[in-house]
Image (tube, rainbow, N blue to C red; front, side, top):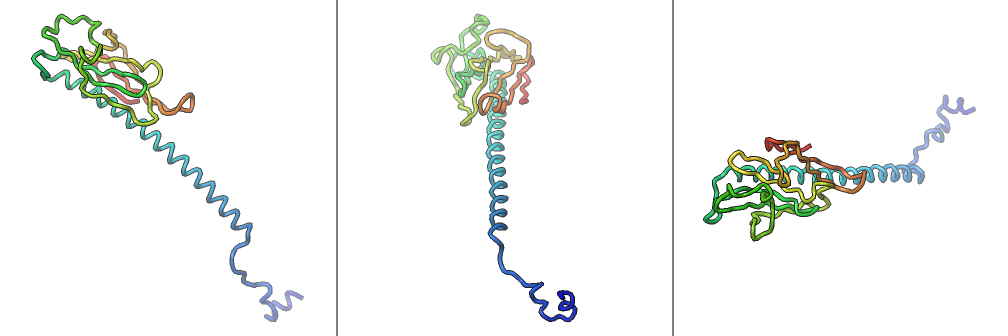
Length: 193
């Protein structure tokens, strides 16, 4: 019966009736898909921003280590006494400082004096705060690195330890936190890993 009507063309409109709009179910499925994609996008954008902040902080820290090395190579004076060494000191888990030590006779300094003591003895050139949410992790806190001209020799925590020194920066906490390492080798080369 239906085939006969289709062949003759009579009342065939009911088979090909055009409907306008979407059903409620189709709309709900579309909204759900868009919502899920939006959530994934927002999460990935935040994770990407956090990772970029961590990378920026690690690169800035490595740059400042190189800056201290370059200062140690220069014959600059801040007063009447020559500068014996420049250093970088991790003050706490979010702040580090660049400092120098000047003395009338640098050869009188013992290895234990190649460190930040206090603002009266070792003036601070610059204090740098890490980006929000970034911190020094683990044994990196209270790390002191001095560069003695003219080579400049690297002195870590008042010792001439020739092993590679690793300073870790972290965003987040626990196992979910991303980290970046700044490695300084015995020759003073700095690398972000």
